[in-house]
Image (cartoon, rainbow, N blue to C red):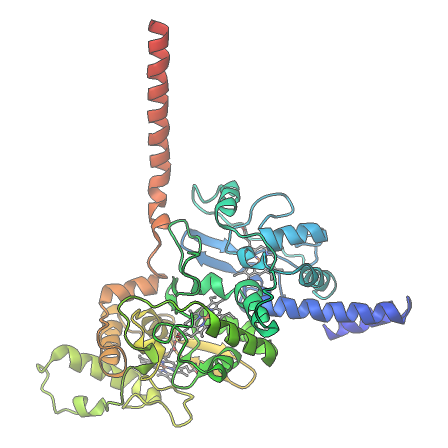
Length: 463
Ligand code: HEC
Ligand code: HEC
Ligand code: HEC
């Protein structure tokens, strides 16, 4: 990047000083848009040294969708004009006219202003190193392999209008709205989806399952959402991935913090907090207190220190013993975490207080990895491959139930079957479950249509 800028400055100097100022400014603006939009998280395969060269397999309920090479090379988007780039980024239409899958969040990027899009294009053409690496083909099963069907989906569900400032709100609020529902596409993870995988427009940011994880309700509701978080806590969470007494970011949220949110200027993070606090509060039915309110310290050693005969309340003893052996070394025998909370408290933690236990289960299975400027966070996962012991579905369920009963929401119970689903990547939505029936169903429908048509033709001939 630096070298490139230097070369750029040298090149532009020969054309005059005026051009230089404009270009480097545009380049910086474009890079900032790319960071806020987190293009990197999906378009750079984990561990790959060539930024934006694609090949990251995104596990969707319909199958794996590979991100593509978006470097300015022939194998990438080198031949894209700005108009073609705009069509891909904001409307999900590739240069060859084919529709993209909404795994590429064009449904949020459609809000991107013309100025930001222009800078982004400039950055990709002049600030990104070209990498000639061929794309990995995405092969979804029928009918999801029919890309044109996404065109119909777009007509039904995609909002293609650029962000419009709301004059009745502050500039800060507008910036927050633009980031949350546009560039930073928080909505794509946190808004629940309907039968056809569209975002439910009447429940914005009300929480949604996300593969193995659960993206919580982040509306302003004081019980179900983030209404009880201070602005400072929200800003700190987005910047570092942790807010004491609230939550630590794992899964997709850890990626968003690591690749994107930690680099946003403080003013942007504040704008996001201000906007979230102003959203329509949505209460999840049956919830009576915030997830971060649950639990209290309870020393597990009291219950496992040989005082209980093996036959006493077997399930509790199992959970307690497993917790003592696998978790207490870091989270402390009473669940309160380490003094500096680098190993966080398990009570007053939304991962254990939420009614959906997925984040607790997924944390035990897959751990927490997150690198930010001020710290590297690592909790090992207890599924394979792991350098710590591997736990069975039943053991993970036992630990979860122990943790929930004492440190979290005691009304929530986990069964081995729940753990098996999280291990597999989450319950498939109805549309994916229906997939095996869509082809036979379609053929059956076609046969019926032909039979009926044949019947009418025969009758007409007979007459
Ligand atoms: C959440 C993941 C995700 C993010 C974030 C994301 N993309 Fe994508 N993008 C994809 C996937 C997946 C595809 C391929 C989709 C397909 O094959 O239908 C894609 C395709 C594209 C294409 C089409 C290229 C081609 O010819 O195949 C362009 C251009 C693109 N993305 C640009 C961007 C830019 C610019 C950003 C940031 C502003 C961005 N993407 C952010 C997942 C993402
Ligand atoms: C790739 C999906 C994804 C994106 C994008 C995303 N989130 Fe999240 N978010 C999650 C998941 C999953 C969790 C749960 C993390 C955990 O508990 O370890 C989460 C947790 C949170 C929490 C904690 C809520 C609680 O009650 O514990 C807040 C606040 C939050 N996200 C805000 C945001 C904001 C604001 C944005 C956009 C700037 C955003 N998220 C973008 C997936 C995402
Ligand atoms: C080697 C130390 C270590 C061990 C062992 C360990 N953890 Fe953790 N745990 C961590 C760290 C580090 C974090 C993340 C802190 C952060 O994100 O700032 C964490 C986070 C968590 C979270 C919060 C995740 C979220 O999404 O908010 C839960 C819940 C949790 N651990 C439960 C457990 C359970 C249950 C066990 C035993 C099966 C366990 N941990 C074992 C270190 C550990």
